[in-house]
Image 1 (cartoon, rainbow, N blue to C red):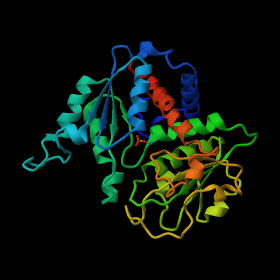
Image 2: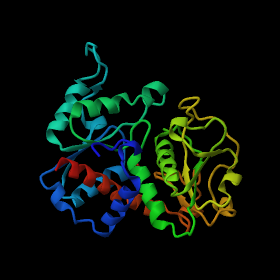
Image 3: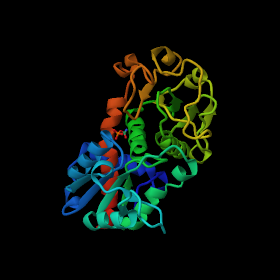
Image 4: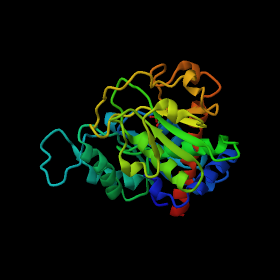
Length: 321
Ligand code: CP
């Protein structure tokens, strides 16, 4: 790998999952790889899990880490080319990214979508320019359209916990929220699950109210459903997540009652484990009874963010050696 921005950057996802689980067993075996190497983490948006797990992963590999909260501490960045910078932006991404690349061997970047212009967000203009100008390998810490470190951790969690004889049924289930949220997590989860389905690792279903369909670019081969009760029948894993509409871009559409996940909805599942990327709005997206009960995998899943990040950084460091 020379960058990690989507599942398409990964040659062998099964091997990457195995690497993550091996690192969980033996976290400090590769410290020589990160000696005298620096990871820079650039955040344009808040983070708890991504920030701490990626820092810890780098430390486990012997790296030094620098964090830049660009939104609060950095200069206001310009991304347009060919304009006179006589407005509020202070530094062009051409210089800013290039300078960060001078100080770091690998850079991580988080940049959320604005959710106002679909083409602008889905073109990943900011992310692509950052990659182009920084000159070092880039790890996505969540872009406008994808969150691959989260999705890798999710697949690691499913592989680690599944003890069944046949492949598991995994359901991505839309849930309510008060805010318009990006499609990055569900896009990415779907993309990784579709790839895993192609490899016969699992069966994948997405269930959502009408109007909340994800871009077809991220759902090849997924079983798309609209009836939550039907979709959950026989499920082994339920991945609960809200997202705003892709079709009516960035909008929170009206939806029927009954989309919050609770214990009642688990009754026709195969005693399904419930996942969520976190942060979660209790008793809006997911009931407290699930979060505090035996079916919840959310803390285990967040713990696996560390091993997912470490597997990715290890692979990138091996490419630098
Ligand atoms: N799941 C996730 O990415 O969490 P943070 O936004 O806190 O990093």
